[in-house]
Image (cartoon, rainbow, N blue to C red; front, side):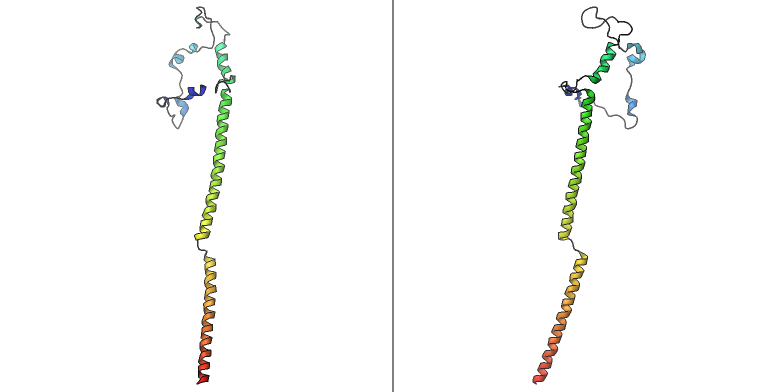
Length: 163
């Protein structure tokens, strides 16, 4: 259930400025006032309440080591992966989904182009083909007109012969 910790109410979300978003990062006023207040040492619990209340002295870096150890501990997704592994998986998943979407988009565009070409073949007019057909019909009309003209002359000749 660690992923639930990342869900933030909308009122706590802010957008960073487009230029220089690092300008929003700031140190706590307590740390600015006293840098020695950064706790790197674990301290000694003298009262037994679990809260270290006495400094342990120099060379006690237990807290700093515990913080640096977070990088290597499996604390993400119910203790199954480290932060690095978790973010690598997210980035890898995004890359895979992005590539799949790109490939699917290209496939869909190919189908659209193919259907568009088919539509043009069915409904479109090929000017060269139509001109060829028109010339063919024109030659046919001319041949038919000459045939009718020749038949008319032959009939005329036959009628004169018979009279």
